[in-house]
Each structure stands twice: as structure tokens, then as C-alpha cells.
Length: 418
Image (cartoon, rainbow, N blue to C red):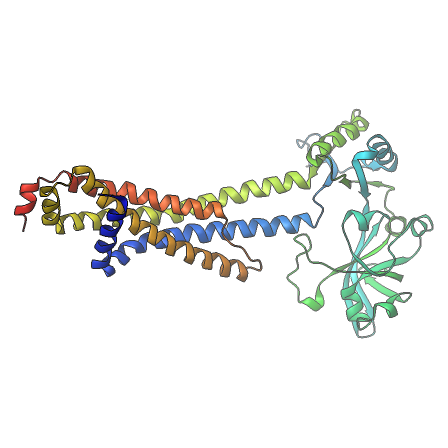
């Protein structure tokens, strides 16, 4: 008996009991749909998180102070000015690895408060930045200019504000905002700044807020030197951000930069510097999400085992119902192999049809589920191929025992069966 004949016979067997076949497929459909849907949601969520983190700078390296020992009386020791990263250290690092460093981003937080003008207001956080901050953090300037070297050298009271602030306090007129003054009220001080630029506010995973849109706090950027002077801060840094050249391995350069800066801390008994690269963070996130996805998919895949047992059960019933047919076929020359292949083929077709329906349902589940979460995702070809292969494997594995039982039936006893 050829392959086409086996498929025809299997199809006729399925058609003769449509409802029973569908109920048999249901476990396979639910299992495949669950696995495909979960893996699709996981891929989409991973991609969304990676995109969000990449907006923070895919080649960013964060260097910060780290205590050499956490076993101290009274908790971790507070750092002093002599422990901080200095401008000289940063300059030496840039000089030594000039081709590997695109930017060095420096910032100092001054205060949080509210910019007010009569009944108009906007929640803000005032930070001092250097001239490379905008490029390093991929901030889009919409109007005017950013903080420059002259602002920093002269300790000017200039500021770059968000388009959200302009929308609330200047009716969205960015041109009218330029040159205007804003008064920021904080808990202890009142500051007046002149607007020289407007940037586009973008929400990221680092500035997520549960506040209403009109109350979202945005950054007001002022010269780094001005923020230090107003805050009475040290002319040094507890942390800096390096933007590595895209052509190098940023994770590896993070180690190189850390080792170089730690030469300055060889005689410091309390502190050293440590680093964390965005590339290594992305890799860690991918690894964690993949582990979670696999774990959840395995749990969902338990329904496939249940579906497989259902397939075996229905095939055993089918063998019993068709005992006389098996006897007749054997009497006219069908071999054990022919009978075995016929029933395995029927089992595989049931699982493949169920798998195909499951893939369609899983794709729809993944698509609409991801859309509700704010991103759109589709199953990868590898997931679809895995689902099809798994369906076939279930059909063969759970169909073999009933098929083998049918193949071993004695033709005389089978013909006598009522």
C-alpha cells in the first residue's frame, strides 16, 4: 500500500467520526496555541524591553563608586570628596582611549520642584549637565540650542526645557518660550532660569510615571557648573556615563576602563570603581526572559501531553471498532507493517490538523495579546517549525502503541470479532 493510499484511508477514518476527531484534536489545539501564544508574547516583550533599553544607549557604560568592603560597623561608609572620580581622571581616560570613547556624559542633580507662572505650572527636576550629555543620551533638540561650553565656563543660568513644559506654560509655542524665564520653586530655594532650548520628552523605562499626563515630571537641564555652584556640590562625580564607539565591544571596554580608573584607587582603602555596560544588561535581560518563556511554555506544554493521551485513547477505540476491517485486510494480504503504518498515519494526521489550527489560534493570541500590552509580535518560523515537529512527534509516539496493537491482531480472531 502506497503513501497516498494510507493518507486516503486515514482521512476517511477521521471523516467518519468528525466530532470524535475534533474532540481528540482539542487537547493538541489548546497545547500548541498556548505554547505559540506564550512564546510570541515573550519574544515581543523581550524585543520591547530591548528597544526601551537601547534608547538609553546600546553602547553606554555606567561607571560608579563601589565600596571595597560591605562589612563595616554602622553600615556602608559614606564617600568623601577624595573618593570621587575627578575631571583629571576622566581626561586621562579619554586621552588614553580616545578612539574607543565617543562621549562622556556628566550630570549633577540639583533639585525637584515646580515651575510656576500664575495659574500655570509644570513639575520639573533640575539637573546640571555637560555639553556632551544630549549626544550621549540621544536627546532630540526641537528648538534653540543645548547647553554649551560657554554656559558651563560662565556659570550661566540658562536652561533647556521639555516640550511638555512648553505645552503647559507657553501654550506649545516653542519659539515664544525661547528667551523667556521660568521660575522653579523647590523645597528650600527659588531659581530663575532663561530658556535657551526645547527638547522632545520621551518616556522610557527609566522615567516611567504613574502620574497623569499633565503632572508628569520632566527634566530641566542647566549648565553643570551652575548646578554644582547652586548645590554647593564637589567638583567631582560619584558616577559617570561613557558612550563607547559602536565599532568596539562595549562590554569588554567596560572592563578595560574600570581597570584603568582603579589605578587611582590602589591606595584607597574604602572605595574603587565598578562598571556596568548596557550591552551586558541587554544580554542578561535576554537570558532571563528566555528562561521565563521556556518555563512558562513547558507548563503550557503539559496540555500537549494530555492531548497525546487523548489521541492514544481514541486510536485504541478505533482499533477496537475496526477489528473486523483489520482482519479482512490481513486476509487479503496486508502485512503487519501496512496495518501499523495506516494507524500511525491516521494519528499523525489528527495531530497535524490540530497543530495547524493551534498555530493559527496561537498566532492570533500572540498578536492580540501583544497589541493589548502595547507592542505587536508574530511567532517566529522556528516556533512554527517546532510546533509542527512536535505535533508529528506526538502523533507518532502516541499512535504507535494502538497501531502496533492493531498490527499484531490475529486475522482469524479479528474476522470472528463482533
